Image 1: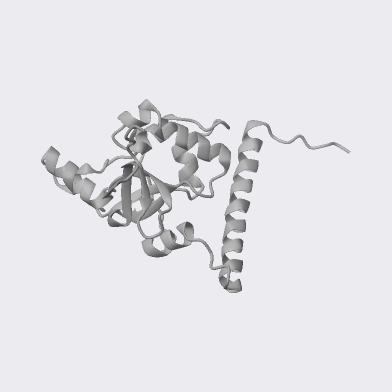
Image 2: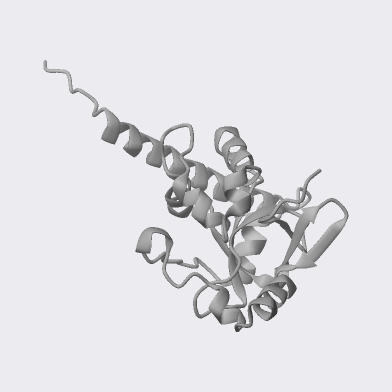
Length: 196
């Protein structure tokens, strides 16, 4: 299999992620990743096909390719991932890049190597403006550790309280996703009200 850029896993859980931004402006120790588990198949398959494409492999940051590509429903990938809470802020030393089977390197180490090769500081690796000159606002909902743990861990099925909390969290996320689909449908073709 050929080497793939932008592919990694969360070191603590082995959960697969795609790295949208290797570093963030002013936060060289943080990255934005897209967890691929629990993503609806239509979106999962589209994102995987994209990361394997030549366009994504040639991109400096995977987010550049995400912003230029649409999901099958017509929505642009990067904004959809952002608005649906699928971009997760994580420490760069929590992510292991896995470009090939059997090889891994911490994202923090990879960033150091790239910065050294370019003769710049790690802070200078970040894209300082978001795609298409729009600032990408990252709103952490909790501490980075809490967010990663909540999104990328499985519930303890022996603990009914934790399992129930996990199911409620998943139900809330699905309800938000359903509401977003409803909104997108209404924008495309508004529902006609019956006259009585």
